[in-house]
Length: 141
Image 1 (spheres, rainbow, N blue to C red):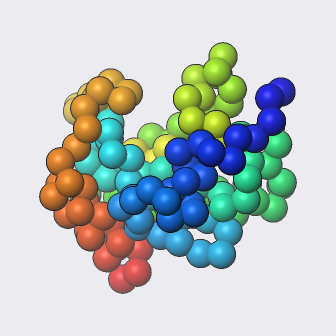
Image 2: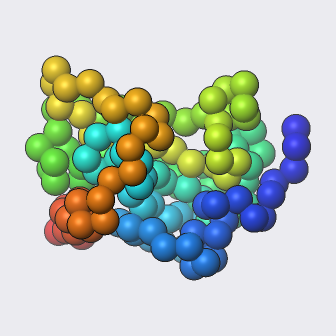
């Protein structure tokens, strides 16, 4: 397996070199909105530790990521009046991974509404800011 690249886009977001719409952060995990969401509120949850994917992350770090995934999913149900949540995680190129820092997609869903295709449309900043405010309020309230 190739080694971790510290210059991947998520590593740059973690270091504060690139902006993001943060919705949750603690000492081990960062959660922020996907700028090309498949539905409103589509969130990425990732460990702060350098892990290429779930094949090389520590058990403690992946456990904490999944704890936060559940917390985000519950908040999405409330914030977006979702009917369900899709959780996706990809490993290596053959598994569909595009950015090689472990991340989990948490996507709020409405019954009968299809998700947009992956990476198909960049969302407007004001829409992302509104979604981030709603989700942050649900996470903290």
